[in-house]
Length: 213
Image (cartoon, rainbow, N blue to C red; front, side, top):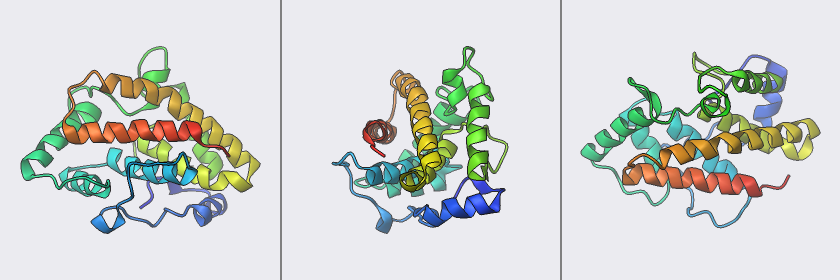
């Protein structure tokens, strides 16, 4: 599954040629990955970023169940637990009321918290350089979009100086606002499943800080 979509074919094909995860699905138990992660490796960070991308892109209870089951060492959620997780996910990240912790960079990096700020446009320019665009009417700095771009750049960076420069920029950008995002989530009363997701997000931040390319 890919979230970002092509609009400049040549650059997009260059990215997906090296993007080893672009056809990989983590919706079944057979695709679970080993956790806790024990090495500060780029591959660990890429794999965890993919799991987090899928979780924060969930649309409904079914996709939440699939993404939850993709995380290793997770017990199957009962129907009631899944219902509570869906409610919590919407309360924190979606709505219909104002979400407690919107997963958009501009909310945390702009002087006045708002969507579609200046940093959103910076991220859009990065996607354009990769030949990518967001597929729907969500802001470009939505967390799942940024994580997918990070994975693509991580895979391209070793052999491409421009990709490496963009990778370091996006890493610093993500870490700068995820610090505020996770701090806000710490103020919420989280269920055990959501706490596990937040622990995974914190783990990814530590891994990303340690990546050397």
